Amino acid sequence: MPRYALKVEYHGAPFSGWQRQSEHPSVQGAIEAALGRVEKREHSIAAAGRTDAGVHGLGQVAHCDMEKDWDPFRLSEALNYHLKPAPVAITACARVGEDFHARFSATWRQYLFRLVMRRAPLTHDKGLAWQVPHALDAAAMQAGADRLIGRHDFTTFRSSICQANSPLRTLDRLDVERVEGPSGPEIRFHVKARAFLHNQVRSFVGTLERVGAGAWTPDDVTAALEARARAACGPVCPPHGLYLAGVGYEPDPFDHI
Image 1: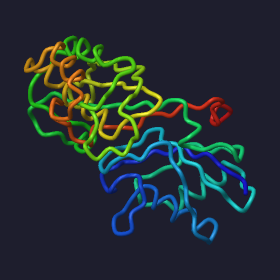
Image 2 (image 1 turned 90 degrees about the vertical axis):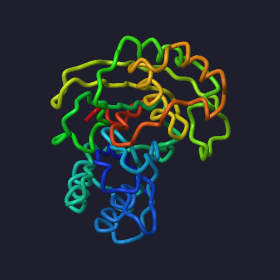
Image 3 (image 1 turned 135 degrees about the vertical axis):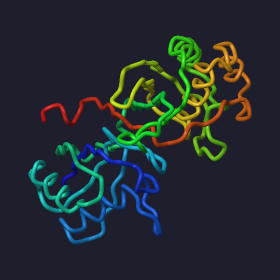
């Protein structure tokens, strides 16, 4: 059966998360339903990451197996037609070998988190960014973020229901960027690793917000990391500022598109 890689963009607000659920809408379920209209049978797809309820996708990657040898562009167009009106879009589609797996072939994953600093309620960015009513010190947050780079036991920064076999992960990038966003001053966190623990990025951001607000110091971040205890983590921020921004592969199946 021909296999295709799909690059997927979605607004996470209407969904219970990526993973298919019997009683709640999911991104996976929406795509599998669209596939069922393109080829009338049961479909099961796999993705690079299972994002939680409210989390968005800019560059999620999934793969599907088809019976027909589809032109990739025509397949993406057909899926986008049948995905309407769900806020899900296939932004790229590529034919891949049968050994390609969206999850297990990935060499890195990158997340973006958006935090807007303003007191007035968000309108255009409501549900797309975490709003805090006070100013934050981006330089202090970066100093705290630097304490997390590298290979560590991240027990403190993973959910108590995380199913990963080990809390050891290597964090390649955690950049804190202050920009003037469309809704006002914004802090953007760019986070990259081969793999993440459940709630790891949201735990990082919630903790670093405390540093930016002056309630914590970068040394407190180090102490929390070394505690290897969930209770030592700062507040976990809400999901709606988080985006799965991209997934890396060698070779990249979308390079030629």
